[in-house]
Every structure is written in structure tokens, then in C-alpha cells.
Image (cartoon, one colour):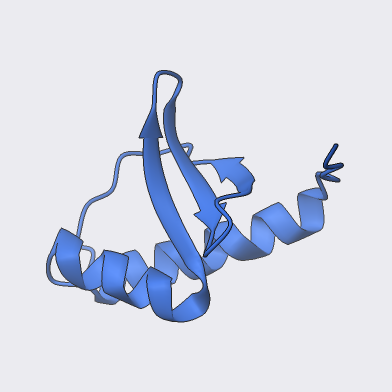
Length: 73
């Protein structure tokens, strides 16, 4: 059995990192590569997009937004 503790502070930090990488990425591929360098991935599930750790795939949090790439206009 694996126990995973959900910490709101960690989730907020991970989401902040993901948003920053998303805004600097030009394409979805760039974004996924950048997330991988930080040890994270985004997986699509029946309940939406979920941020997971690499390489074990432990769920960190759900993405509360739809990804859009490039600088905000």
C-alpha cells in the first residue's frame, strides 16, 4: 500500500511552476519537455488533466485550467 499525502502548499508551488513553464513554451511539446526536466508530466484522465511525478506517475494535483501556450496577450 502506498500512502500519498496531499499538501496544498506543494500543490500550489507545482501549479505555479507549471503555469510559468506554460507561458514560456511555444508549443505543447516544449511544455511537456520542460515539465519532464522538472520531474513532472501531465496525464489526461476521465476527470481531466492531472499532474503526475516522473518516473512513478504519482498524482500531484488536477489542472484547474486548459493549457494555452506562449506569452499572455
